[in-house]
Image 1 (cartoon, rainbow, N blue to C red):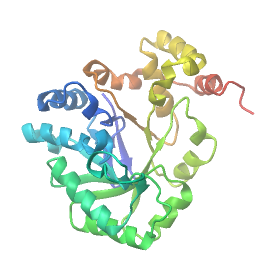
Image 2: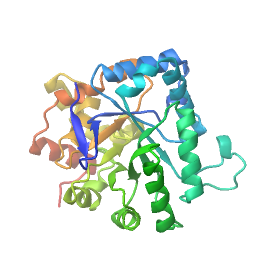
Image 3: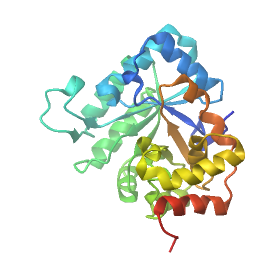
Image 4: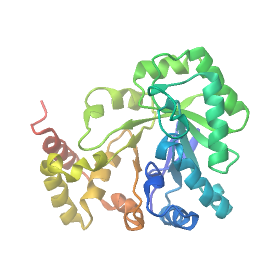
Amino acid sequence: MTDRLSLSGQLEISRLVYGMWRVADDENTAPSHVQAKLEACLEQGITTIDQADIYGDYGAEAVLGAALKAAPHLRDRIELVTKCDIVAPCGKYADKRVKYYDTSAAHITASVEASLVNMATDRIDLLLIHRPDPMMDHHETGAALDAVVASGKVGHIGVSNFKLNDWTLLQSAMSTPLITNQIEASVLHFAPFIDGDIAWMQERAIRPMAWSPLAGGALFSEQGAPVRAVLERVAGEQGVDATAVAVAWLLAHPAKIAPVMGTNSLERIRAISDAHKVTIDRETWFEILTAAWGQEVP
């Protein structure tokens, strides 16, 4: 069973999050199959479900929504996270000439309305601005985010892939507190632990969410071979899979990171909480970092 995590004292989520980035890519997108995935998560105490409007070429939210229409009793057992602001030339935006970000009030409002319809729900528990927008008018964006919270359609606001200055700029124009930042972090993408990205959140007691905690599969490629050898050794000692050790490495950090685990395999979904069975002491944590870095720490 996974434990719980409070995001800035505003929203409680499960420490391990199920990501639906590729749910629309599954060979089986039937509502009953998606429901089975949700139930496999709930059996482990994984209650937080991560989505984004752009996932599945803007189709993944609707795959989840069909399952929630078929099994509406599941809605009150989960926290729904989704994201907006990426406009890419695919799906409903296939006519666009270029990928861009849109944090205008009109786009945020329309995105929220579309996500509510697509996911067959009356509320989004946590809405994230998906990418920092270099053309953001922080006053317009902040007011729009405050408004969707005031409407009751969105419970809480966070961001994704933001640097400190992006965060403080947006927060300066909002009355609603930003409660999390979802960033890329893994044993192979360890830069946030040494470049200050984790540090500024830890200083402010902002609990990060981590996307691609298995490095998008690179952990199991030639690139990941050196660190995988260490992970497999630790896994063998503790009776789990190397994947669980890689996730436990993130869980062990005092910043209290919430890894977002994405898979379409029911077998792998049922094993997500194995990460909680792993003990990572300080020396082992640095051993894994050293193997990933390919050198001793300075």
